[in-house]
Length: 238
Image 1: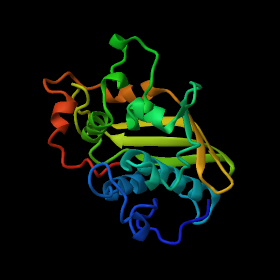
Image 2 (image 1 turned 180 degrees about the vertical axis):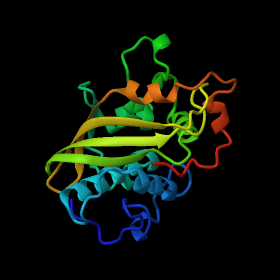
Image 3 (image 1 turned 60 degrees about the vertical axis):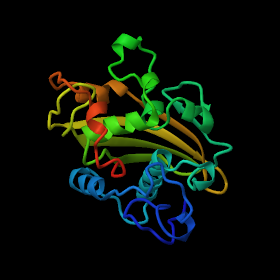
């Protein structure tokens, strides 16, 4: 989990440079994290010392998240071993990278639920990775910032507490923007192999904490999906 030699973003690596010249990006180019980095710097509650375990874990998680949302091909992933990688949410059965894609990837894999369809609010089974991405980018035009609050153990089994937050400045699933901060807290476990690649990810959090904040606004005529079709910020996400 050593720090990379070249970092093009203050908090993420594997975005630019010679090793990324043939990378296939979901939206045609590397994402621009300028807006969400500013949100992060303005709203974080922890500032970790350079080179600390907490900073390394935070940058690893941000880079993993970037690759999961924006890289398309297995050969382009550098934080994980695609052949060994498994993901699980809230104790559910672990799934492979390919099975995760079938769940809709991105936000959909992170918002799985056992609720009946009519009570879901946001239904991941009805979304694709792209419609989900558009919905959240529309709701959070400045991105969805991430900070690590505490690291309980270091590699090879990293256990940490995190906070995600964004400002709801756009509609979401037929609900008007509130202009309020929406937060999500949770725990995660990342298991690394001997080469420092992530092979197992487990997340534990309450999806209702996120969706409750996004669905407080009054009902509006057009859905966030429709509004997002013209959104210019698809590559600017956190």
